[in-house]
Image (cartoon, rainbow, N blue to C red; front, top):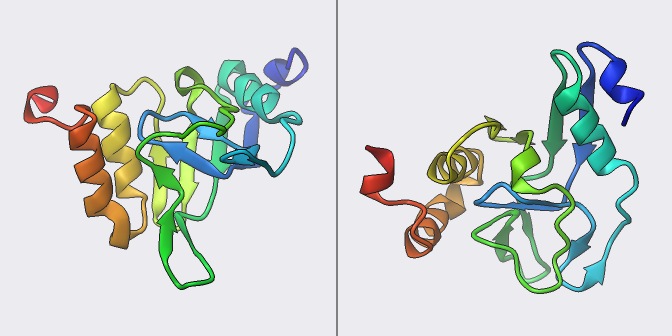
Length: 144
């Protein structure tokens, strides 16, 4: 990371598996099933974050379809036991799906949820809004 931070305008692009409505990012596991290791993921995200004019992008498909044809969002209401948080929400960068880009840096919790829902697959957006309401991060009082 000390080398990366010295590179002005550094751009980091990594993939990830999922993000929750709080902005926490998982790039290592799906539940308890290990998919990859940490590698340099957080080093590149943090390095870009602290580099002058640097930016970190984490890209993923907004959703996936299982063998039964059921769509599952990769933007989750919250992570479950076994999911490994690779990037904490305090270092959440730009999140990218085929539906757009969400800059999570410096956003309040409800703003993060709103930004992520905007880049979710259209078929799951209403469910994500309901989940955010149930978690008390999507309320009228938060948006005043």
